[in-house]
Amino acid sequence: MIVRTELKARDVMTPDPLCVAPSATIRDLAHLFEEHEFSGAPVTDNQGRVIGIVSKTDLIRRCAQGTVDIPPAYLFEVLCEQEAEDEAGEVIPEPLVCVEDFMTEDPLMVAPDLSVAEVARRMFERRVHRVIVADADNFPIGIITSMDLLGAFSR
Image (cartoon, rainbow, N blue to C red):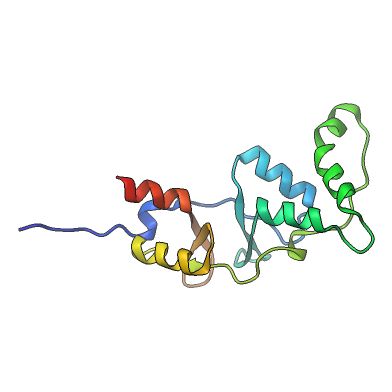
């Protein structure tokens, strides 16, 4: 008799994902991505519930678009000059561009007991590279990236 166990979202997720506040600035977000070496994060409200998701791609796209009053070059300069500021003590005024201005508001969320195959299917259908694993109250408990899925299927 062969007993087959199916991998679940909880088996491949990275637990306790680092989350971002909707009020975080583009500089805060870029620093977070660089410091923790990841490329996307859930966006949570004051109670810790998921309200969106944001990625490096979203950040770059937002900077490339600029705003009505701020050209794209200035936004990139704000991000690039971050380390130089820390050393030189100069402060480049940061425009008020916050995560809530460019996050994805309807992120793909799954339950921890959903099969990995179903997670992969949903990610493929929505054309996304990360999914938030959340409990019944929308509190994030993990995150799964496309690389996590490739690792699971290659085992």
